Image 1 (cartoon, rainbow over the protein chains, first blue to last red):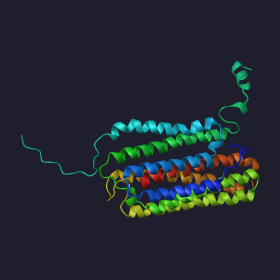
Image 2: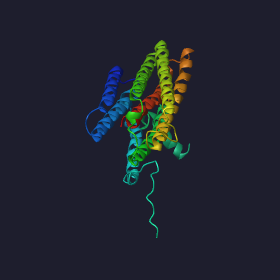
Image 3: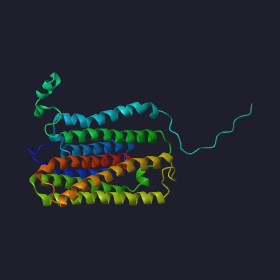
Image 4: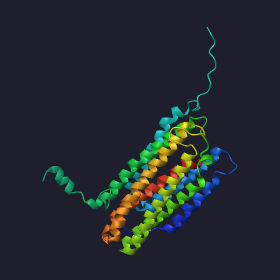
Length: 106
Length: 205
C-alpha cells in the first residue's frame, strides 16, 4: 500500500465480514439440499477472503503484479483439484473393516 | 561497467512493474503465495479424502461451530486492530500503534487459548490423530493437521507482532517503520484469510 491512496473504510469492511460470518453459520441450518448449502458457504467464504485481501491487505491499491502473485496459488489449487478428480471418482470406502463374505470352497 | 550492469542501471526502480516502493513487501507476498499453496494442498487433500469416504461425519454435528464462529470473530477483530495500528504509525501516532498492536496480539493469544480449549475438549471426546468414535479415522487426522498447521501460523504471527510491540513500547518505532509494520500486517491478515477458509471447509461444509 502506498500512503498516498485514500484509506479504506475498515470498520465498514468489519461489519461486512461479521454479517457474512453470521450468515454462514445460519446457512448450515437451512432446510435445503446440502449441495446448495455448500455452494452458498463457498461463495460467502470466497467473498470474505476477497474483502480481507482487497481492503485489509490493500491489494485493491497495489500494482497489478501483486494481484497476479496473489491469484497464482488460487489458480494452482484449482488445477490441483482437477488433478485429484480421478481419485474423487473412485468408490467411497468405509474406514472400518467390514466382515468378509465367506469364500466358497473349490 | 559491464553491459549487463549498464542495462540494469538504465532501469528506473520506480518504473519496476514488480514493486514501486518496497522489496520487503514483494518478498512477503511471494512467501504468502507459497504458504497459500501449502494450505491449498491440505484443503484439496482434505476434500479428496472426505469425498472418498462413506462414513465421514458431518463436521458441524461433531465440532463446536459456535466456539469456532467466535474464534473467527476474534481473528476478524484482530485484523481490524492491525490495520488501525498501521494507520496509526503512518500518522506518526505512537500511542495508537501501541494500543492497537497490543489488542492484535491479545486477539491472537485469545484465539490460541480457545483453540487449545477446543482441542482438549475434542480429545476427551475421543477425537485423536489415529481414531475417533464418530466415523472415518482420517476425520481426526485431517482436522488436527489442518487446524494445527494454522495454529502454528497464528503462534508465529503472535511472536512476530510481539517483537514489534516490544519495540513500540520502547518507543523505537516511528513513521519510518510503517513499511515494516505493513509487511507484518500482511502476514497477520493472511492468517485471518486462511482461517476464514478453514472455518468454512473444515467446520461448516
